[in-house]
Image 1 (cartoon, one colour):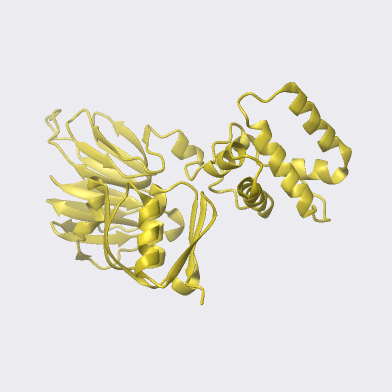
Image 2 (cartoon, one colour; image 1 turned 135 degrees about the horizontal axis):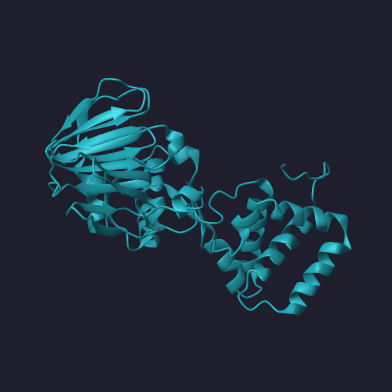
Length: 330
Protein backbone atom coordinates (compact mmCIF):
# COMPACT_ATOMS: atom_id res chain seq x y z
CA UNK A 1 0.00 0.00 0.00
CA UNK A 2 1.39 3.43 -0.88
CA UNK A 3 2.12 5.92 1.87
CA UNK A 4 -0.60 8.45 2.67
CA UNK A 5 0.30 12.12 3.07
CA UNK A 6 -1.67 14.96 4.65
CA UNK A 7 -3.95 16.98 2.43
CA UNK A 8 -2.52 20.23 3.81
CA UNK A 9 0.81 21.21 2.18
CA UNK A 10 4.06 20.87 4.09
CA UNK A 11 5.53 24.32 4.76
CA UNK A 12 8.57 25.15 2.61
CA UNK A 13 10.69 25.82 5.70
CA UNK A 14 9.89 22.35 7.03
CA UNK A 15 10.71 20.79 3.65
CA UNK A 16 14.16 22.37 3.73
CA UNK A 17 14.69 21.30 7.35
CA UNK A 18 13.83 17.72 6.41
CA UNK A 19 16.24 17.84 3.47
CA UNK A 20 18.96 19.19 5.76
CA UNK A 21 18.38 16.33 8.21
CA UNK A 22 18.48 13.80 5.37
CA UNK A 23 21.89 15.09 4.32
CA UNK A 24 23.20 15.12 7.89
CA UNK A 25 22.09 11.53 8.48
CA UNK A 26 23.93 10.36 5.35
CA UNK A 27 27.29 11.26 6.90
CA UNK A 28 29.57 8.26 7.38
CA UNK A 29 30.35 9.32 10.97
CA UNK A 30 26.96 10.59 12.11
CA UNK A 31 26.95 10.86 15.90
CA UNK A 32 24.32 9.50 18.28
CA UNK A 33 23.74 13.06 19.48
CA UNK A 34 22.83 14.07 15.90
CA UNK A 35 20.33 11.22 15.64
CA UNK A 36 18.76 12.27 18.94
CA UNK A 37 18.40 15.87 17.75
CA UNK A 38 16.81 14.61 14.52
CA UNK A 39 14.30 12.48 16.46
CA UNK A 40 13.46 15.48 18.65
CA UNK A 41 12.88 17.61 15.55
CA UNK A 42 10.75 14.93 13.89
CA UNK A 43 8.56 14.47 16.99
CA UNK A 44 8.23 18.19 17.74
CA UNK A 45 5.46 18.91 15.23
CA UNK A 46 3.08 16.99 12.98
CA UNK A 47 4.43 18.88 9.94
CA UNK A 48 7.90 17.52 10.74
CA UNK A 49 6.59 13.97 10.99
CA UNK A 50 4.66 14.31 7.73
CA UNK A 51 7.73 15.68 5.94
CA UNK A 52 9.82 12.75 7.14
CA UNK A 53 7.10 10.30 6.04
CA UNK A 54 7.42 11.82 2.60
CA UNK A 55 11.16 11.16 2.58
CA UNK A 56 10.75 7.63 3.93
CA UNK A 57 8.24 6.90 1.15
CA UNK A 58 11.20 6.69 -1.23
CA UNK A 59 12.38 3.75 0.83
CA UNK A 60 15.69 2.06 0.14
CA UNK A 61 16.54 4.42 -2.70
CA UNK A 62 17.56 6.98 -0.06
CA UNK A 63 19.81 4.61 1.87
CA UNK A 64 23.47 5.46 1.40
CA UNK A 65 22.53 8.46 -0.74
CA UNK A 66 25.29 9.05 -3.28
CA UNK A 67 23.73 11.89 -5.26
CA UNK A 68 26.36 14.50 -6.16
CA UNK A 69 23.86 17.17 -5.16
CA UNK A 70 23.55 15.66 -1.67
CA UNK A 71 27.34 15.28 -1.54
CA UNK A 72 27.73 18.96 -2.35
CA UNK A 73 25.23 19.91 0.36
CA UNK A 74 27.03 17.70 2.89
CA UNK A 75 30.60 18.76 2.16
CA UNK A 76 30.15 22.49 1.67
CA UNK A 77 30.32 24.72 4.74
CA UNK A 78 27.10 26.35 5.86
CA UNK A 79 27.25 29.08 3.25
CA UNK A 80 24.96 30.29 0.50
CA UNK A 81 26.24 27.44 -1.68
CA UNK A 82 25.15 24.80 0.79
CA UNK A 83 21.81 26.52 1.34
CA UNK A 84 21.15 26.50 -2.40
CA UNK A 85 22.07 22.81 -2.61
CA UNK A 86 19.74 21.89 0.28
CA UNK A 87 16.95 24.01 -1.20
CA UNK A 88 17.28 22.23 -4.54
CA UNK A 89 17.32 18.86 -2.79
CA UNK A 90 14.12 19.78 -0.96
CA UNK A 91 12.42 20.80 -4.21
CA UNK A 92 13.32 17.47 -5.76
CA UNK A 93 12.15 15.43 -2.79
CA UNK A 94 8.85 17.20 -2.26
CA UNK A 95 8.02 17.83 -5.91
CA UNK A 96 8.55 14.15 -6.66
CA UNK A 97 11.47 14.69 -9.07
CA UNK A 98 13.81 12.09 -7.60
CA UNK A 99 14.57 10.12 -10.77
CA UNK A 100 18.20 11.19 -10.85
CA UNK A 101 18.56 11.94 -7.14
CA UNK A 102 20.03 8.55 -6.40
CA UNK A 103 21.76 8.40 -9.77
CA UNK A 104 20.35 8.00 -13.23
CA UNK A 105 21.19 4.32 -12.88
CA UNK A 106 18.78 3.79 -10.01
CA UNK A 107 16.34 1.27 -11.63
CA UNK A 108 17.05 -2.19 -10.29
CA UNK A 109 17.58 -3.77 -13.71
CA UNK A 110 20.50 -1.42 -14.27
CA UNK A 111 22.05 -1.88 -10.83
CA UNK A 112 21.93 -5.66 -11.21
CA UNK A 113 23.20 -5.80 -14.80
CA UNK A 114 26.22 -8.00 -15.57
CA UNK A 115 28.26 -5.01 -16.67
CA UNK A 116 27.52 -1.31 -16.40
CA UNK A 117 29.19 2.07 -16.58
CA UNK A 118 28.49 5.16 -14.52
CA UNK A 119 28.37 8.87 -15.32
CA UNK A 120 31.36 9.84 -17.47
CA UNK A 121 32.68 6.26 -17.50
CA UNK A 122 33.44 4.25 -20.65
CA UNK A 123 34.85 0.75 -20.85
CA UNK A 124 35.92 -1.98 -23.28
CA UNK A 125 34.98 -5.65 -22.79
CA UNK A 126 36.23 -8.76 -24.57
CA UNK A 127 33.73 -11.62 -24.44
CA UNK A 128 34.65 -15.31 -24.27
CA UNK A 129 34.40 -15.72 -28.04
CA UNK A 130 36.62 -12.70 -28.76
CA UNK A 131 33.79 -10.27 -29.52
CA UNK A 132 34.69 -6.71 -28.52
CA UNK A 133 32.19 -4.42 -26.78
CA UNK A 134 32.75 -0.75 -26.01
CA UNK A 135 30.24 0.69 -23.52
CA UNK A 136 29.47 4.39 -23.44
CA UNK A 137 28.70 6.25 -20.21
CA UNK A 138 25.57 5.18 -18.30
CA UNK A 139 25.25 1.89 -20.14
CA UNK A 140 24.14 -1.46 -18.70
CA UNK A 141 24.18 -4.90 -20.34
CA UNK A 142 23.46 -8.52 -19.52
CA UNK A 143 25.42 -11.31 -21.22
CA UNK A 144 23.88 -14.70 -21.93
CA UNK A 145 25.95 -17.26 -23.85
CA UNK A 146 24.37 -20.70 -24.27
CA UNK A 147 24.87 -23.74 -26.49
CA UNK A 148 22.51 -22.26 -29.08
CA UNK A 149 23.11 -18.51 -29.08
CA UNK A 150 25.31 -15.63 -28.01
CA UNK A 151 23.06 -12.90 -26.59
CA UNK A 152 23.81 -9.45 -25.16
CA UNK A 153 20.84 -7.57 -23.70
CA UNK A 154 21.23 -3.79 -23.75
CA UNK A 155 19.36 -2.56 -20.68
CA UNK A 156 20.26 1.06 -21.22
CA UNK A 157 22.73 3.28 -23.05
CA UNK A 158 24.80 2.48 -26.10
CA UNK A 159 27.60 0.19 -27.17
CA UNK A 160 29.82 -0.44 -30.16
CA UNK A 161 30.11 -4.11 -31.14
CA UNK A 162 32.85 -5.82 -33.16
CA UNK A 163 31.82 -9.46 -33.52
CA UNK A 164 34.18 -12.43 -33.67
CA UNK A 165 33.59 -15.85 -35.29
CA UNK A 166 31.94 -18.37 -33.00
CA UNK A 167 34.59 -20.78 -31.69
CA UNK A 168 31.95 -23.38 -30.79
CA UNK A 169 30.72 -24.39 -34.23
CA UNK A 170 28.49 -27.49 -34.11
CA UNK A 171 26.85 -29.67 -36.76
CA UNK A 172 23.98 -27.22 -36.89
CA UNK A 173 26.37 -24.34 -37.53
CA UNK A 174 27.68 -21.44 -35.48
CA UNK A 175 25.67 -19.76 -32.75
CA UNK A 176 24.10 -16.46 -33.86
CA UNK A 177 25.31 -13.29 -32.14
CA UNK A 178 22.30 -11.26 -30.97
CA UNK A 179 21.78 -7.86 -29.37
CA UNK A 180 18.41 -7.36 -27.67
CA UNK A 181 16.86 -4.04 -26.58
CA UNK A 182 13.42 -3.19 -25.24
CA UNK A 183 12.26 -2.81 -28.84
CA UNK A 184 13.56 -5.90 -30.60
CA UNK A 185 16.56 -8.04 -31.59
CA UNK A 186 19.50 -7.58 -33.93
CA UNK A 187 21.50 -10.44 -35.45
CA UNK A 188 25.05 -9.61 -36.47
CA UNK A 189 26.19 -10.83 -39.88
CA UNK A 190 29.97 -10.51 -39.40
CA UNK A 191 30.01 -6.89 -38.44
CA UNK A 192 30.94 -3.71 -36.54
CA UNK A 193 27.90 -1.75 -35.40
CA UNK A 194 26.47 0.69 -32.86
CA UNK A 195 23.30 0.09 -30.83
CA UNK A 196 21.66 2.82 -28.75
CA UNK A 197 18.82 2.72 -26.25
CA UNK A 198 19.22 5.86 -24.21
CA UNK A 199 15.66 6.49 -23.03
CA UNK A 200 12.79 4.00 -23.16
CA UNK A 201 10.30 6.87 -23.07
CA UNK A 202 11.39 7.77 -26.60
CA UNK A 203 10.10 4.36 -27.64
CA UNK A 204 12.86 3.38 -30.03
CA UNK A 205 16.32 1.92 -30.45
CA UNK A 206 18.93 2.86 -33.06
CA UNK A 207 21.39 0.68 -34.96
CA UNK A 208 24.19 2.03 -37.17
CA UNK A 209 26.34 -0.39 -39.19
CA UNK A 210 29.96 0.43 -40.02
CA UNK A 211 31.09 -2.96 -41.37
CA UNK A 212 29.14 -6.00 -42.56
CA UNK A 213 25.39 -6.09 -41.96
CA UNK A 214 22.82 -6.51 -39.19
CA UNK A 215 19.41 -8.16 -39.36
CA UNK A 216 16.91 -6.15 -37.31
CA UNK A 217 13.63 -7.60 -36.05
CA UNK A 218 11.37 -5.34 -33.94
CA UNK A 219 9.38 -7.11 -31.25
CA UNK A 220 6.00 -6.92 -33.02
CA UNK A 221 7.12 -6.97 -36.67
CA UNK A 222 7.20 -10.33 -38.49
CA UNK A 223 9.50 -9.39 -41.38
CA UNK A 224 13.07 -8.39 -40.41
CA UNK A 225 15.13 -5.78 -42.22
CA UNK A 226 18.80 -5.96 -43.22
CA UNK A 227 20.82 -2.83 -42.37
CA UNK A 228 24.03 -2.79 -44.37
CA UNK A 229 27.47 -1.20 -44.17
CA UNK A 230 27.13 2.59 -44.03
CA UNK A 231 23.44 2.56 -43.05
CA UNK A 232 21.46 3.20 -39.88
CA UNK A 233 17.85 3.06 -38.77
CA UNK A 234 15.68 3.52 -35.70
CA UNK A 235 12.90 1.14 -34.72
CA UNK A 236 10.19 0.68 -32.12
CA UNK A 237 8.44 -2.56 -31.23
CA UNK A 238 5.90 -1.89 -33.97
CA UNK A 239 7.73 -0.23 -36.87
CA UNK A 240 10.92 0.72 -38.66
CA UNK A 241 11.99 4.27 -39.45
CA UNK A 242 13.57 5.09 -42.79
CA UNK A 243 17.07 3.78 -43.48
CA UNK A 244 19.60 6.64 -43.50
CA UNK A 245 23.31 7.10 -44.00
CA UNK A 246 25.22 6.01 -40.89
CA UNK A 247 26.63 8.90 -38.87
CA UNK A 248 30.36 8.31 -38.36
CA UNK A 249 30.39 11.01 -35.67
CA UNK A 250 28.00 8.92 -33.53
CA UNK A 251 30.92 6.75 -32.32
CA UNK A 252 33.31 9.63 -31.55
CA UNK A 253 32.70 8.91 -27.85
CA UNK A 254 34.91 5.83 -28.22
CA UNK A 255 37.79 8.34 -28.59
CA UNK A 256 36.52 10.56 -25.77
CA UNK A 257 34.95 13.14 -28.08
CA UNK A 258 31.49 14.47 -28.90
CA UNK A 259 31.41 15.48 -32.57
CA UNK A 260 28.26 17.09 -33.98
CA UNK A 261 27.08 19.04 -37.00
CA UNK A 262 23.95 21.19 -36.80
CA UNK A 263 22.60 19.24 -33.83
CA UNK A 264 19.78 20.96 -31.88
CA UNK A 265 21.06 22.25 -28.56
CA UNK A 266 18.50 20.22 -26.61
CA UNK A 267 19.65 17.00 -28.26
CA UNK A 268 23.29 18.00 -27.75
CA UNK A 269 22.78 18.47 -24.01
CA UNK A 270 20.95 15.13 -23.85
CA UNK A 271 24.00 13.47 -25.47
CA UNK A 272 26.30 15.29 -23.05
CA UNK A 273 24.23 14.37 -19.98
CA UNK A 274 25.65 10.85 -19.40
CA UNK A 275 29.12 12.37 -19.17
CA UNK A 276 28.28 14.94 -16.49
CA UNK A 277 27.02 14.40 -12.95
CA UNK A 278 23.78 16.00 -11.90
CA UNK A 279 20.98 17.74 -13.74
CA UNK A 280 21.67 19.39 -17.11
CA UNK A 281 18.63 21.18 -18.46
CA UNK A 282 17.76 23.32 -21.46
CA UNK A 283 15.26 26.16 -21.75
CA UNK A 284 12.74 25.39 -24.48
CA UNK A 285 13.33 28.77 -26.15
CA UNK A 286 16.93 27.83 -27.07
CA UNK A 287 16.53 24.05 -27.52
CA UNK A 288 16.53 24.29 -31.33
CA UNK A 289 19.70 26.35 -31.68
CA UNK A 290 22.19 24.43 -33.83
CA UNK A 291 25.50 23.16 -32.40
CA UNK A 292 28.51 22.24 -34.54
CA UNK A 293 31.96 21.28 -33.37
CA UNK A 294 34.29 18.80 -31.70
CA UNK A 295 34.11 18.67 -27.90
CA UNK A 296 36.38 16.71 -25.51
CA UNK A 297 34.23 14.79 -23.01
CA UNK A 298 36.90 14.93 -20.30
CA UNK A 299 35.94 18.54 -19.42
CA UNK A 300 32.20 19.19 -19.54
CA UNK A 301 32.58 22.60 -17.85
CA UNK A 302 34.72 23.66 -20.81
CA UNK A 303 32.04 22.43 -23.20
CA UNK A 304 29.40 24.53 -21.44
CA UNK A 305 31.71 27.54 -21.58
CA UNK A 306 32.21 27.00 -25.32
CA UNK A 307 28.43 26.96 -25.79
CA UNK A 308 28.14 30.24 -23.94
CA UNK A 309 30.79 31.82 -26.19
CA UNK A 310 29.37 30.55 -29.49
CA UNK A 311 25.61 30.69 -28.93
CA UNK A 312 23.25 33.35 -27.51
CA UNK A 313 22.90 31.43 -24.24
CA UNK A 314 23.81 31.77 -20.57
CA UNK A 315 24.79 28.88 -18.30
CA UNK A 316 22.99 29.11 -14.96
CA UNK A 317 24.61 27.14 -12.13
CA UNK A 318 22.03 26.69 -9.37
CA UNK A 319 24.67 24.44 -7.80
CA UNK A 320 27.70 22.65 -9.24
CA UNK A 321 25.36 19.75 -10.01
CA UNK A 322 22.26 21.62 -11.13
CA UNK A 323 22.85 23.45 -14.41
CA UNK A 324 20.47 24.95 -16.94
CA UNK A 325 21.20 26.49 -20.33
CA UNK A 326 19.05 29.57 -20.86
CA UNK A 327 18.75 32.42 -23.38
CA UNK A 328 21.20 35.28 -22.92
CA UNK A 329 19.81 37.94 -20.63
CA UNK A 330 19.40 41.33 -22.27
